[in-house]
Length: 247
Image 1: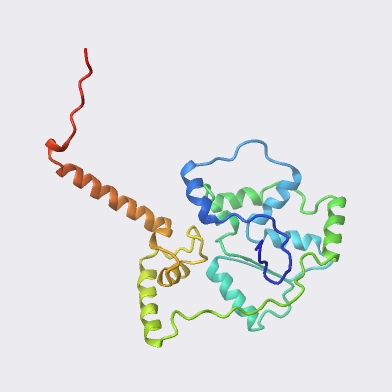
Image 2: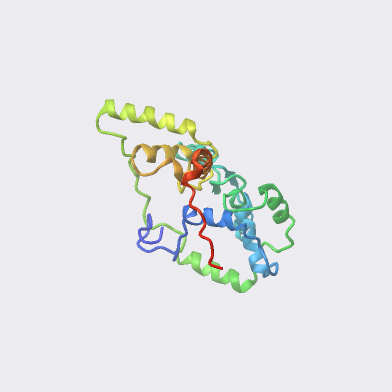
């Protein structure tokens, strides 16, 4: 997204933080939000974290009534994009797709229930439209084509599991077996968009089962039980005696 943006020569983004790199530390530290409620501008953009929030903002900016469609959840997003490729969304002006259920509030880095967060944000007292000076900045950026792609996105061919049909079928069966052991919730904590994508990476040698935080927890629990069992079998003669302190 930053170094090699798709469809652009230069990215509008400066930094990208991978969920896989921070999620475990965030969950382990049990971080809570503190401080003030933020500025009016911050409140306004918080609405983007829920499904339909971006659509509301775009509709507020538009000079005419927009026909929009909002969807959340990876499977639903894929289904909608397939419908778009098949040309079945004629008449729709704006499409909002969120991989996480209910939007960003349904991501793995949140500590509060997504439904409670949605309730809070829906009741947020803030104006949808920013001040006039901010509107002028946005309009000027739009006229400069900041959000337009200079060329169509290239089609990325999916690499086969193997050039050999027999080997590819064997890897496909292995991928199905691995996928069956995963939680099937597509949380994204492993850095992949879905559990099936993780299973495919494992088969390709690009990942391991412990990339999944649920499988990692199971592994840690299993190791803890093994260590406890082994500790109970250690003869007392192997325990080192504490050295007596000189009187």
